[in-house]
Length: 130
Image 1: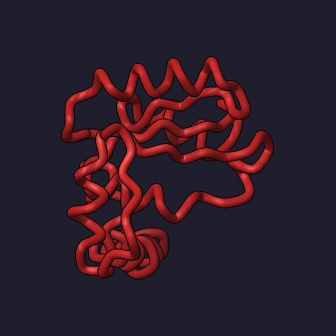
Image 2: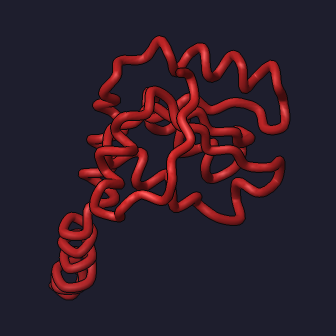
């Protein structure tokens, strides 16, 4: 089947469940893409999923896609034709999205975030004081 509806799944099964999807849809209304980064996107990227994101190019979410080519397919919001084309593009992508996975490891991993924070807060002031 093309679409599977399942009952509530155990939380520990979430990574495998997300990784089993061929394409993920991250649908934002026009003008909403700058209001919040969808939390589901972080999980999609972490499992190397292929996502179609509806966001205008001049939003933070649209800029994320422009700055990291291959991260996801970004299409115009509220356009059926654009969504269809985006899904078609995402279906042609490799099953494991290495760009998405690498982005998650670099920018979304807790340890990596804390290390960057410590470097910026502890080391940079020391270098400026010299």
